[in-house]
Length: 455
Ligand code: XUL
Ligand code: CO
Image (tube, rainbow, N blue to C red):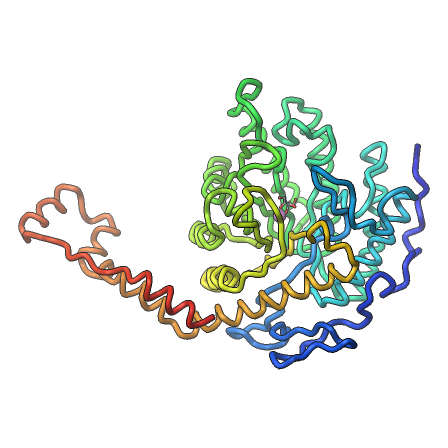
């Protein structure tokens, strides 16, 4: 049955109706004292403040995500929806999609986030056919265009949901059935073009179902080849339509599948190399995905940067005691400071951004909890950026690293790296010189003390 399509121009909720906050949150500085009239103001997020020569807003490029904040209903494996948003439950799904868009853009306005992100299925309900789904998406696109125009909020990235529908249970690009590959390709084509029309700065592919549960039913080699083909098609189409944004893969080791092909930065780099895509595709790194892969976030950012594939960030956190993807809002200052230090060392966030791929806890059921969660996370990141700025400006950490490797500037160090030595010549020199290298302290504790001083 076809659902009624509500005209794109019909906004269903007056601005500000959903949240008790009415006016955009202000920056009031560190001395801010909350009052009943103004319970929250930014203490650190001063978007125009210059940090290492760039406006804070441009250094951080915050984005709020559609899925957790407006689609998520608080359901967990043991319990039903707890948020009870007015656009959830029974009702005309297109009218609900419009209501959701009104509230989403009102949140963006209140917290002052310059960007947002979405999956196709977050913003418009799936239809009976792909054509119908695309038509519905087109209606929402018109609403987005108008709202983006009115608010100045921009699109950090769009993406296609290739994991929720049961057709994708055995994968999208890596499905044993080429019809599913074709369907996924058609879906990505549509969202990539929509992202392009909306001026998106990036397009993300997260392969939640691109993996497997057991080798007993899986041809791993074949699936990897399919995935390589798929990604090549995406890159080809990007160039065909003239999309200037970055194509980003988002690594994650597991969940929902047991083994995911885009495990971590190193794995994805190997995959890109094998498919000749290492200069075409970059990475969207997520804090909690790094932890699940057994790395810390800094490692993943530093490695991606070293390999030239650092693209963007999904900013959230896990829980030290839980080994699954809890997607919590960031709240740990030292952790985020070290993360942003690596981002600054990587040359900044570039065309990417800090997307809050984070969700409220199931018991945070008030509409205003969405405002508090985002605004607190933004202020925390701003504070962390100021710490990272101090780390860069002071330069003591960087100087230590430089000194530690300065031997490589010696004639021997250069000769080795320039390929002027062989095992034979090195062995001869060591013997002739009676060489005995002298170990030096790496001073980890002193450096950790320095970092605590910046915080
Ligand atoms: C899943 C995840 C996704 C991607 C977009 O863990 O992070 O939400 O960010 O598909
Ligand atoms: Co993510």
